[in-house]
Length: 257
Image (cartoon, rainbow, N blue to C red; front, side):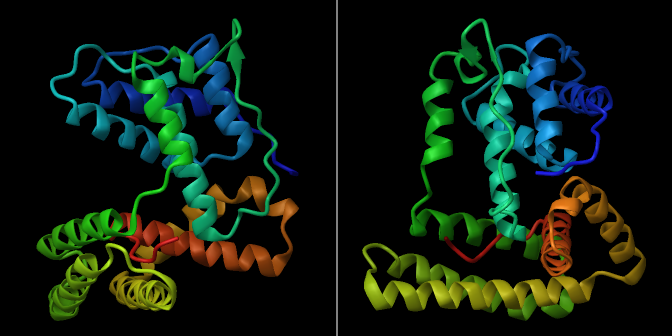
C-alpha cells in the first residue's frame, strides 16, 4: 500500500496525551515497545480519531468491571484500536486495501500477552467474535434513545426517530432464531432505516461544519490516496464523511453485517 511519510513521534505524542486524559491525568509514557506498537498504528494508516475511539472502547469495558485499580497502558488498547480500525475500513469501503502491518512483538510477546490477566482472551474474542443480531439491535435502540434525548437531529426529526426506535424494538423481539428469507428481509429493512437516519443526519449539518469535517476526512485518507483510483477514493471520502457525521451526532449504525 502506497502511503505518505508518517510522523510517528507526533502521532505517539497525541496518543500519549489522549491516554493521559483518559487516565484522569496520570501520565503513562508511550516509549519502548509501546512506542513501536503505536507507531505501527500510524504506519498502517489508523487515523488518530479512530485510535481514540478504540481507546474509548477499552476504557468503557474497563469501567464496567468496577473501580479502576491502576492506570491503563496503551498496550492494553491494541485489540480495540484494531477492531475499530477494521470497522472503519469496512464502513468506508477500504477492506480491499492491502494490510501492510505486522503486529509488533517484543521479547517474544505480542501486545496482547502484555495485557492484564483475563484480558488476552477477551481481546481475542473481540477480534474474532461478532455480536448477535438481537444484541446489536438492543445496543442500537439504546444509542438511538440517547440521541433522541440529546436532540442531535433536531426537534423536527423526533417523530421519525421515535418511529424507528419502535420498529427496531419490535425487530429485536423477532430477531431470535430468524433464518433464511426472513433474516434477509430484516437485514434489508435495517439497511433502509440506516440510510434514512443518515439522510436526516446529513441534512442537520450546516455547511461550515460539513466543510470542516471534509477537511478531517481528507487528512484521514491521505495515506491511502495514492493507492486508490479516483472513483474509489470519491466513494470512500463520502462514506468517511458519513462516518464522521454519525460519530459527531452519536448515532448508531443500524445496518448489520
